[in-house]
Image (cartoon, rainbow, N blue to C red; front, side):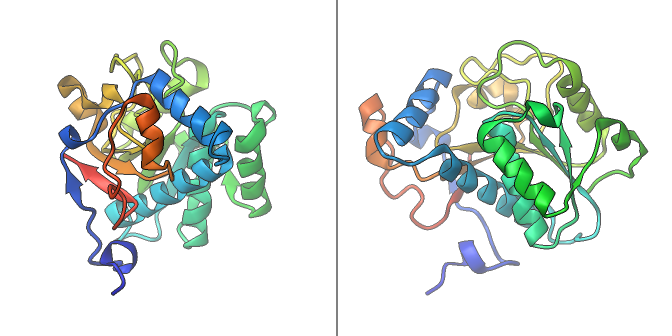
Length: 256
């Protein structure tokens, strides 16, 4: 039987699991997971980024886009891995015929590596990549995707990143953050100013410790966990136990 979690467009529900049943990661542990994936497993960053972006697009579709396929979706993309995942999300949403506009936090010539590869794909698809200044002239979007800063955050957001965070928070529309709301430190949960006030956050692999701080609940919003294809046994090298069947039925789980 085909799982309704994957194919049941109108009936899709993500299963719930208590966050107490799975471990949470520090920034250093997540970096080590990434290293083990690449160096020992041969699973490259581009593969993990593709999984992250596709799952983010799927969550956006079923949580926020069922009733509106006309209004714009604004994707805010930084120049790092978090931004790359957001750009993958933009591609999938565009392929599904949702109207997507991308706003970069840095000039295009500062994008390198895999995020640049993802950006170039979107340019070949002729998607709208709009300057920050154009946002104030647009009508309120249906959804904002926050892919500005991930677990590499060090200090308060500045420059255009800070401006984009302030703009997003002023819009009367849901914000879906990738991995962490931009402006939150992954390990301690320290919240810098400005910070994204997310309606929902989809974190990757395992939740980051900062997301689970009770005082950050209003910033995180509904918390989801998405599979990026980390083999469960890999976590045991970090003395972490993750259930082998965590993502057996679905790639996205709601954490309670």
